[in-house]
Length: 166
Figure 1 (cartoon, rainbow, N blue to C red):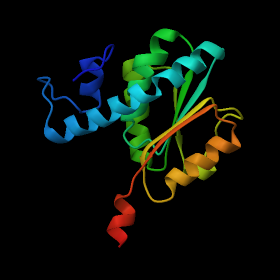
Figure 2 (figure 1 turned 90 degrees about the vertical axis):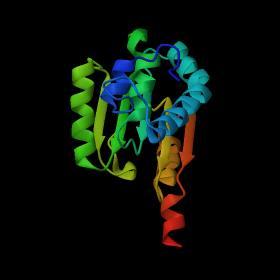
Figure 3 (figure 1 turned 60 degrees about the horizontal axis):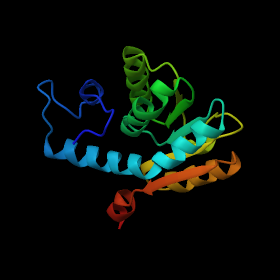
């Protein structure tokens, strides 16, 4: 189930693997979703790494940061360049993610505690992602990508909140 270059240590940090290295059904589902999206956007990441000296990748509505941490490990860590910015409005998730990045030595990961529409990000974004951003967060992510001239945008909307409201 691990993607090439994906470490069990990171998946344990993300609580997707148990200490014994096992996956429960929910974790397996999440990991499959994230790895599928990573596979789809790999060409975009490779493109921005090839074309820009220090590409900016923004993960909107980052939640616990599964996507951002896996992207960083698989693409940015060994590239020695690129910054991944996670935007999330819940302070406890950003604090946990910051601490996790520090433990892992992922020093080019940055964390912005904010709603997407008000997030302070660099003028130029090269790749914008959003995985299961709820309610209007997918729309806000698309607008952010447009405002900051993103070269690539990869979003997977979430319908759970809309469906629950009905």
